[in-house]
Length: 165
Image (cartoon, rainbow, N blue to C red; front, side, top):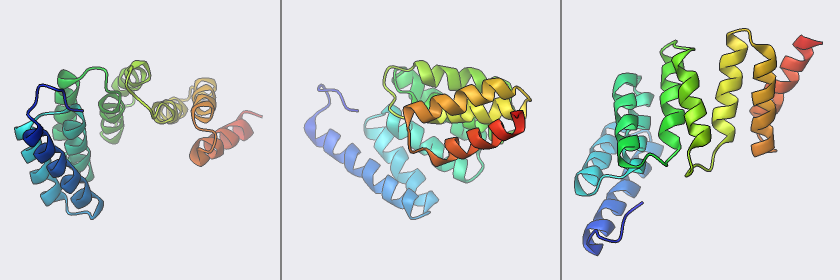
């Protein structure tokens, strides 16, 4: 998250602000979270801080601002997968079931991403809504391959299989 060229004191302060922002976010104090993420970014911008700031904007249905933060996160570190998936999710929330697909696919290709089940699940939902049921089933199955205990993916796959039979 932080490179070695950043002075230790600034790293510590940026990390502390990021952690406080996340705590505020978890407590649904979105205004405080936004302010704290912005302060962390002002000290040292990271892809994580921009992505999480976007996430808070999404809780307020400020999807354009959320997308802008994710784009900034990608500019900071294009290897970080979360902002790609998040952009896709925000486009879905805006009703755009087409442009979101490329963002979910980019998330799957990102080298630094630990939650690959999410873009697979998101692709499954989008393909199901668009009537591409076999593609949807494939992605629900891939989500389960990534995370075997992903209950939502298992339920979605079972329901879709029942529709296909």
